[in-house]
Length: 73
Image 1 (spheres, one colour):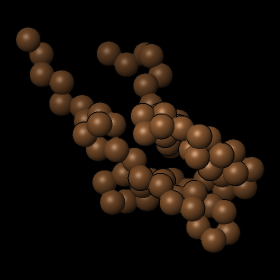
Image 2: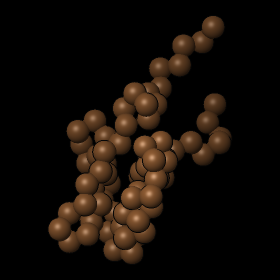
Image 3: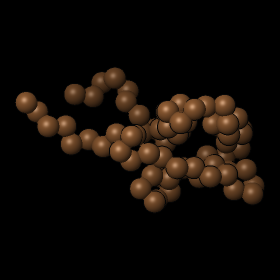
Image 4: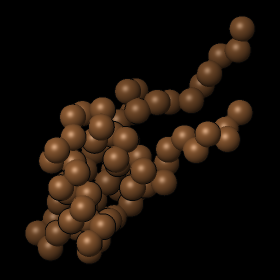
């Protein structure tokens, strides 16, 4: 049996906050991993406000580019 050492969104979730000028700072493990600006930030904020916790994690993962693409082994 193979041990999977990858850390998932449940174990290490993304966190986010909106700055005064409308940027979205996405962090994980206490470090900012990406900053979303402009129209993309406005769309992300709207989507995050509507999403549940799991959906918000998926949106943040997509915003960082850190999500499963289907070709991992």
